[in-house]
Image (cartoon, rainbow, N blue to C red):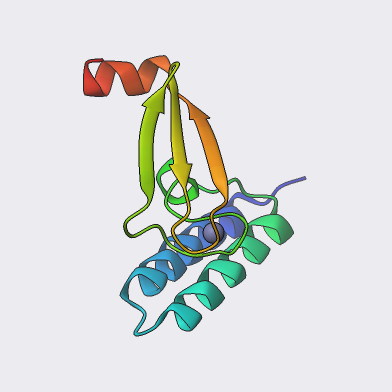
Length: 101
Ligand SMILES: [Zn+2]
């Protein structure tokens, strides 16, 4: 059984850790914050919000700053500038509505 209070606390910590990662003074710190945030979400069984999920590389935990960004065949293709890992995210209807593709 899930405790709603614990989930709220976990979500709060996730957003705070993400903010810290964005404002971290160097990449090593920001990667550390991302790793802690991922561990927390796994341990608490909480899914990370979409905007957080899509803003860092899953392989090297590097926040995307200037990624290679393309749209092809209704897929968003993001290539990490740090490790070269390629990610493909399907363009869903919500995204289409927001961006009027
Ligand atoms: Zn990467």
